[in-house]
Image 1 (spheres, rainbow, N blue to C red):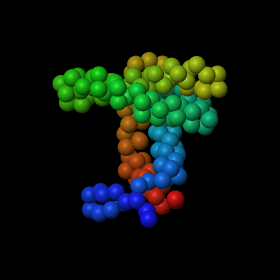
Image 2: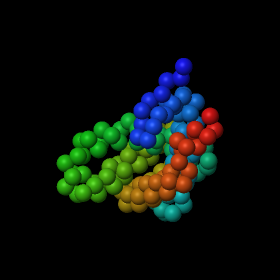
Image 3: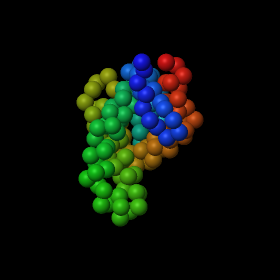
Image 4: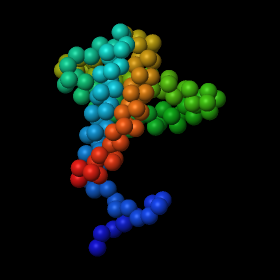
Length: 146
């Protein structure tokens, strides 16, 4: 018998590992597209090649999953006082950290010239990722493909 879990509006089967993996890959590709758009639009962001784009998106995704929640928790008072605008600074820091980590690998060609390039890049990545996630919906795509 299959296990089901209660959700709003009815029962839902838990997601399989395969479904989660497909959703991860779709989200990774969306992040890669957003990073590429930011590199094209912001003069201070330098990105060369599709391999570097995919690796930068992977680093950024991992940092967003594991480091960003900690930064949000630590910055909660500033987030409340600025009505969430401090999140732009956190996103800038995460993108800067991504560039620093990518710089440790000779095979990744990604560099950011300074704070403002990182700021505008983080803003563009956030907007493009949000738009593409609204259009593509990785979870829905994963459920259809698995």
